[in-house]
Image (cartoon, rainbow, N blue to C red; front, side, top):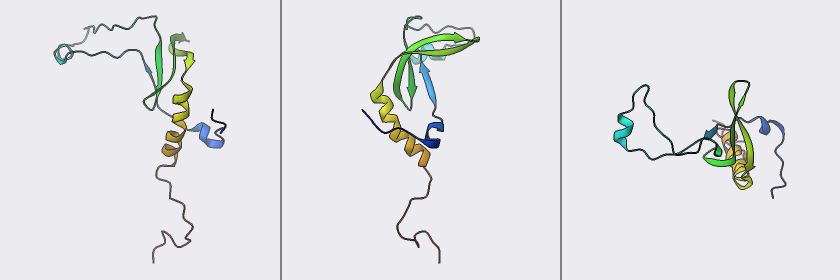
Length: 111
């Protein structure tokens, strides 16, 4: 288990979160035939679990709920290993573009 706890503004880092209801394979011809009002049936059970996905990794499973007239996600289980993998990715995303530290005080200085 990871004993490191994120601190400071790290916890304020916003990540894109997706809720995956179903993934289907559909013939291209069927997709091209779609038009307004058309229905694409899904094989997913309407009362079945959905996945909470961050950075392409499933971090939790749960169910869709309605909260104040909007969809919500109720967690039924978490994938701790996927959550642990997010930490380095989040740190990399947060520090992307930050100047590299160097022990040389003249590094990066122009003459």
